[in-house]
Amino acid sequence: MRLAVDPAARGQRIDGFGAALTESSARLLWGLPPDQRAAVLRSLFDPVAGAGLSVVRVPMGASDFATGQYTYDDVAAGTADPRLARFSVARDDRVVVPVLREILAVDSRVRIVASPWSAPAWMKSSSRLGGGSLRPRWYRAWAEYFVRFVRAYAARGITVSAVTVQNEPGHGDPSYPTMTMSAAEQARFVATALGPAFAAAGLTTDIVGYDHNWDTPAVPTQVLGDAAAGRYLSGIGWHCYRGDPSAQSQVHADFPGKATWLTECSAGDWHGRPADGFGWLADVVVDALRNWASTALLWNLALDPAGGPHLGGCGGCRGVVTIAPRAGTDLREVDRSPEFDLLGLAARAAPRGAVRIGARASSGAVGAVAFSLPDGHRSVLAHNRTDDEAVLTVDDGGGAFTVRLAPHALAAFRWRR
Image (cartoon, rainbow, N blue to C red; front, side, top):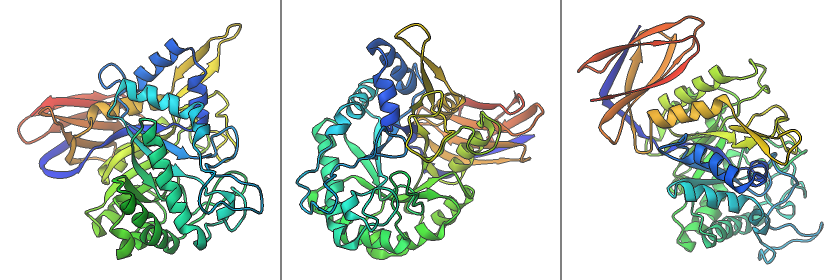
């Protein structure tokens, strides 16, 4: 089997790989003894001695992985706070902000991306955090909420590089914080409220649209196609749970100037595939990169053995690391999941600043993506999708080498160009 690498066919610049620091993840990490927590964070974020993760997604308020339902401006039922007088991120100061600071102490270049699961109940048609939509009368207040969040984190020494408009806007499960937002509503909110609010505040934070599955590319196409909204959007975020990564290329073809992010994908037993899900997730990451993704983020950075703590949603998700009590002691066991290795290999193959280049395999048995690296090397991330050993010859036009891939193995290779 041959993999023809074409250095002249240049694609997107890679911004990095990572996972989400939900409140559940932060609470588990903060519960570790300081020395153990420092070692775990180095193993995840150190670009030389660790996995080299370089992007962290943070929920703005409660997600389905939190220890309670909350936003940054909760008031008594039947009342409202249009001036956001009660806005506060103080709850994040308990565990989320301290863990983020320690992550940034490992690598100050780690980028933070933030996503809301729900607006405060008083802003919503449902008058509750679960389900419902954002009332248009509160668009400007909701946009100001984003501004306050970015500024509050900046005051804590944490730069929020990007925000997504709404996590999974097509999903309105009433059992945990969610909020629906149609394509027309997303476009109107960005064009009339969020974009102008960021501009007026002098914020350079990227605004990322959609943040949902591959199966409905018509939604981000409509949002970007709205000229008034599109001018404020840096790109589109995608989730892996339905559809396939070719949707990313479909939207990229219509809007080549907008970036593509894979903003969420979780392994675990929720999808009915084998319990480890490694092969499936390896294909997700490789194929997302082949389809213009500059960033690939998994879901929870850390969970317990039961896949929690969680409020609802995924009951079988798995963290990049699993943290559990060590029997008979006050210590904790920290186990690396297969996704830890997947992210580490991807980060080695495509460090920050790498550029995707052309790669065409002679067979679909191996999924592969190639890169030109800032240090002068070229690299390949390859996944053997079969039950048999694969013999792969990589040829970049100036030379070739042959490697053997074990069944279902994911591997990264570098060579000097």
